[in-house]
Structures are given as structure tokens and as C-alpha cells.
Image 1 (spheres, rainbow, N blue to C red):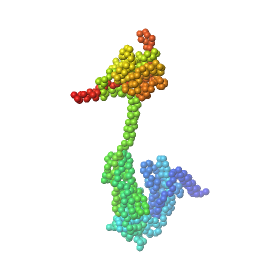
Image 2 (spheres, rainbow, N blue to C red):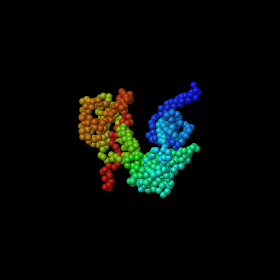
Image 3 (tube, rainbow, N blue to C red):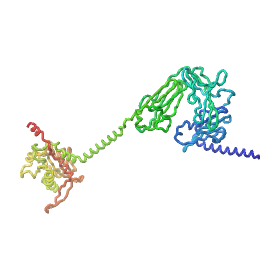
Image 4 (spheres, rainbow, N blue to C red):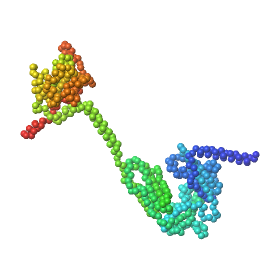
Length: 587
């Protein structure tokens, strides 16, 4: 076999293997299909293919990426080493194109985490010899009798090439030749000749205009042209209308981010915007997205009655000096201008959390106060009486001789009754009289021998401020006990009529309250009783021996129980009684 044929087959096999490998790699990428916009070119001119994925998506401004181009037909990777071709960033540029370059080109974008791909279609149209315009033209409209302009669609080349120059031509209708345009009183070239501005456009300005760019890149000179079909609209459209911002304020918290959109509507179908820009403190806002305050790119959307034009303003972190300052969006066109302002206002303080915490704290303190008061009510009241005696009236001059009248079951003949009697005659006076200074009348200690109980009670109760009643289950559950209770008619009347405050000392636990006389049961239900039995271990029974006698069971009260007894005793305050104050006033 001929060596040339073998070499040709080997090269084809290598190319097919490489193509299969590249296609397999690209198959794992997110596929965006074919780009909607085709790239149209003519032979012997340049053609620029932009990778739309990178151009449109803002995420590639923040993350690293690389772009690889493939010829979809052959599967070969385009490295820029090929003749008449160069790679620049994410763009693929052909210098002197021919019909063989027509086809589909695959753009693959890889990031550290993902991969994306999209096909760009290049269409090469034959050019008629001596033709002044390209076979395909983009339509642009101008308004009659207004200052309007045409824009050369070659702006994408400006940031790519090293140097360039642009000339404008108009197709002469009669001779079908190209007329080179020069600047005069009606025509003006701006923005590096990318814009052809007309002063008071007329219907005669309609036609085909071609902008021709001659550029140099990496030492190679090439040419590219675009043709514009200009239509003149007789009706003069209205001026721009600013929708947002609407001279309002935005309340934000310091440190937060703000994104505000400037939104303008331009009526009509002519060339849209000359300038749409955000200003802050009299200076144009930066377009650098790394700045704390910057503005985004302009976006346009054509509708049936005009164009929507938008541009965003981003404040990544609001500082205190930004408040109460104007952010101004200005829209400037040949038909007029529109302005909109907005200011940043400090956000109202969020009082919901402090109020919630305060309410929760107050509720917690209230609950704790209620619990503490219920648990330590007696101690708190006694402390208040000690500190603020001047709030309470003095007992001097009230006509009473005793602070309390002590009544206890007598003569029951059992050990418990003897212990109760010993507590009433010995222990109670030792604490209340000797320690706290109260004066007690104890039946059996202070009454005269042989004196009738009814007479003693009748006379003495009127001289006492309180009554202390000691009782046991046995003193009320048998006939003798009930007889003892009923013999003291003054006591019975006091309980019924409530003419004297009564403190109940329950010396024994009662399992059946029905044994209590009705008057005593009603009083116990109403105010309770100081219980002298072992529940909660506030009282205790101890056995002691005195002078070699038989041991006797006695009651011993804790300090807290004595506090409860003192709680029910009368308060000897320092405030003068009303009649004494009146007497002093009379004097």
C-alpha cells in the first residue's frame, strides 16, 4: 500500500479519536443548545464569535473559569494557532473568513465545580461584486424632525482589538454606489465614530448605512463591516418617563445591603437612550462591581409602544454617612430628560424584641414575686411591720389591757391535753411575753380561783385585742370536750359574731372536720389554722423529764411557726390614733 495513503488513514483515525474524546468530555457539561443569535459574515472580512454563556451570566464575574472552542463539524479543539484565527478571552475571532468557515462552533466553559456548553452558528453570505452593502442589514429607526442617531453594531470589537478606525458610508439610491460620509452641520460622529448623530432628521435620511471598521490585533490587520437599514418615523415620540425611583425614601438598617432599580419608559421605536446613569453626591457611581456602591449594566426591553430601560444601583453595605443623601438616576435622550431621586433613611428601631424581653422579664418577676410572697408571706409582712411601724396605729389608749386571750382545753385527763395545757401556760408566755413583749390573759393562770368561767370570759374578752384558741381532736370529739367548748358562751358568741379576731392553734391533726362546732368550722374554712402537728415537720413532739417525774410529751415550735403566731398577733404601731391627733389639733 502506498505510504501516503497509510499516512492519510492514520491522520484520519487520530482525528476521529481526538474528536470522540473531546465530544465525550463536552457531553458531561450543562447543554444550552444553540445560541439564538447567528453571526453573519462575508468572505475576506473578520467575524467575531462571543461565548454567550460568559457574556450573559453574571456568575462568571466572581468565579474563575476557562473557555475552550471546538469545531462542531470536525470535533477539533480550536487553539488559536490555526491560520486566520485567534482566541481572545472568551471570544473566537476569524480574520479573513471564507465559505469553508461556515458552520457550528462549540463553546465549553469550565469552572472549578461545573461545566457548560453552547453552540454558536456562523453564517457566511456571498457578496455581489461591487455591492455597497452587506446582504443582511439590521433595522434602526429615527424620528423625523428630531436629533437622533444610528449606532454601529461593531462595539464588541472595541474592547478586543489593539487599535481601530471607523468610516461611515451611505448607499446612493440612483447610482447604487457608496458615498463616504463626512462630519458637517447635520452629521456628527461620536463615541470613537461608533455613533452617527443626525441634527433634525428628515425622511431623506432613510436608507442603507454601512459602518466599516479597520482594526489591528496582534500585528494582523483586518476589516469588518455592518449594514444598517434606517427608517424614519414621522411621528415625534414623547419624552422619557421615569417610573423608579419616585423621589421616595427607603428605610434600612446600618450594615444592610440595598439594591435599587432605575426604570425608564421611552415611547416610540427610534434609537433609545443617550445616557442612563446613577449619581451620588454629585458624582457618577462606579461601574466596578467590587466597589461598595456601584451600578450595574443597562438592560433594555422593546415592547409594542416603546422601550423599557433599567439600571440597578447596589449598595453592598450601608454606612451612617449614606443616610439622608440623594441617589439620583438621570435619563437623557434627544427627546428630553427625566430624573428620579431616592434617599436612605435609618430604619425604625425594632422594639418588638426588647418589648418581648421586657414583658417576659416582668411576667417572670411577677410570677416569682407571687411564688415568693405565697411562700414567705408571713416573714415579709413581719419585716414590713418592723421597718414601717409608723404606718400602724399605736395600741395605747384603745381601752384594751391584753394583746390576746388564750383559751385551751382543760381537765381532759389525757396526756395530750396535759401537753397542750403545759404549752399554753409555760411555752406560749415564754415566747410571746418574754421575747416579743405581748401581754396575754390565760384562763387558769390569770383568773381568780373559784371564779365562774362565763363571768371571766364576759369581762375579760372586752379587754383583749385577740383570741388564741388551742384545740385538739379529743377536746372536741367527746362529750366532755364539747361541754368545755359550749361552757364558754363568750367564746361561742365571739366566733359567731366575729367581734374579736381569733387565731386558731390546731394541736392535733383532724381527719374528720365534722367534729368541729359549726362556728369553729366556718372560721377555720375562712382563715385557716396554725397547725401544731407533724405535717411538713414544722412542729415536733419531744419527750422530756423534769425533776424525776414521769416523762411528759410537750410541743416545740420552729422559728417559722412562731413567726406565723406573731403574724396573727396585733401590731403595736407608732402612729397616733385618730382621736389623739384630733386632740392635738384642738390644742
